[in-house]
Image 1 (cartoon, rainbow, N blue to C red):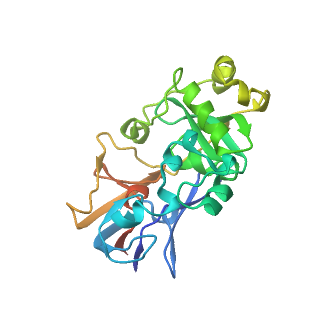
Image 2 (cartoon, helix red, strand yellow):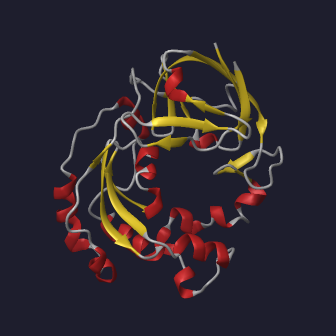
Length: 264
């Protein structure tokens, strides 16, 4: 059976283990059902997620011209502390920015390769943690806008990491941490503006991924260098497909690329 479409972030369903779906325009693939099956992935072309033209993808699924124009790729996406909608100041599209920024946001701790701090919209819990390959996570602050979440993250980054080591995450070389203790230890460093939103009493969320075999030396599949790849699917973690030969495919980083997937 063959499927073809433009890659976008896999959709997930919170269960034990997590269910993963790759959604195309007229079809979808449940990857959990394909474990231990042989897949052939072929590069077909590009399709910018904004203009939908066959133009090389620059970043985040957008061609170069769209990346520097659309609000979905503005600096405040990656750096929440740059959010300005609460001041009624436009960056690229004030209506979009108000909708995205002026809603409840969570500052959280997640353990994927190590304990890290992060920010996400409240409605993206636990999806954000799943996408990062975290096996445990906890909310520490719930604030009414993205700016407050951003300045809280910046303050806490001086005391805890804010990056995931993708190789360590995929190899599963991680240890359990007491995130409640981490939460309480970081409380004194929360900015005064956000302190009233500190979450005093909650529990960790644990996440189980559908992985039969973790890679020992993960090597990333690059469609610009490898237009055709065949391998046996052994797991899905974060936004990565994991294959028997230690090849891994980051679906999120390949958004905007058109592929055909043949299931043998």
